[in-house]
Length: 78
Image (tube, rainbow, N blue to C red; front, side, top):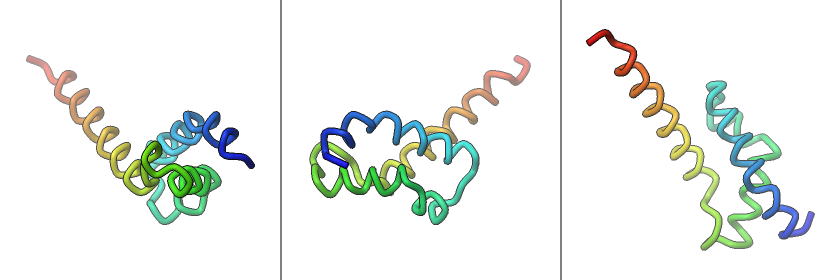
């Protein structure tokens, strides 16, 4: 797979990573996926443009946690 093909599919890999996180998959399980290896390849080839997949994992995991926390606050009767 070429770098340009990887770059074109970057949003897809990020979406797949986000879905795995929403399913509650552990970091160890996520690291064995195709999307993880493609994100690693992008980071290795263009580290200034593409973040380390582990960093992305924790960033997306934190965002998912913040979203669920904020929706719980809004759902409480005032």
